[in-house]
Length: 186
Image (cartoon, rainbow, N blue to C red):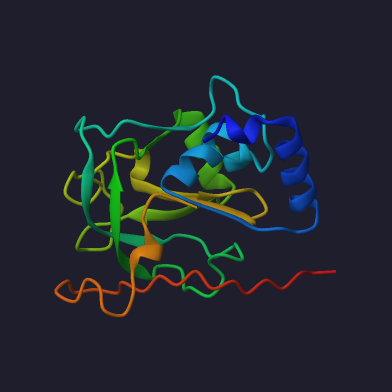
């Protein structure tokens, strides 16, 4: 999928879309494509180098499919502006290559820039690398990140798989409705 985003015509259209204040959301494989294209974390296609973050194979070496608890770490994005920082959601994940990995230097920069959007958390709502809460082994329990301006959001969890009559036997807040409230400052 990331290779498709490298098509020059598509690259030009994505740039024009972002120049018009367009918003982009990538979930699971879409998140992978955004990261591998450079749209995340940099906000532009093609800005990928050897130190760029990646999404890679789960540490356990197999596909995982389960409900995880995630926490909103920033709401500095149109995608997250309706949420409170610290709000948690119980959402499904299903992937074999969902582990977010970056060098310590890049991770430090992402944290400093406020680009870490969501993290896997334990029962105490603390980010953790413990397998049952962070099943893919993502660095610093990162589940999702945003671009520097917040208009591009990528995450592993499938918020879109929730509907009123699904996951009835699972406790928790499952409705992570990514309603957009964009207030452009002119």
